Amino acid sequence: MSWAAGTLVVLGALLAFAGSLGLLRLKTFYERVHPPTMGTTLGAGLILIGSMLHFSAIEARPVLHELLIGVFMTLSTPVTYMLLVRAALHRDRAEGSDPLHGGKKETT
Image (cartoon, rainbow, N blue to C red; front, side, top):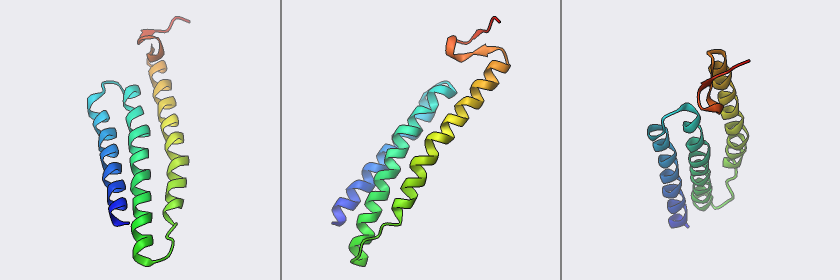
């Protein structure tokens, strides 16, 4: 049981690390939004599952309070990133550039 939990934790850490690397490699804010939402969220989910397995085996009873963390993470992460992107889009349009159309100035 502990090897399965360890494997899940290591895989989750690798996915979270890959999502973090995306923040360093990608150029624009809009490109940087995707790696954390995909890689890091899945990585944290695998770490939570590994933690549930490990502590359930140690305490000889189901330990499920990590599910609450997973629910909050699943609900809050996409909403937070959507709000960040909308705020950045609003700021960029207020400054006169539209990143959705190649950074060209808007003509209204």
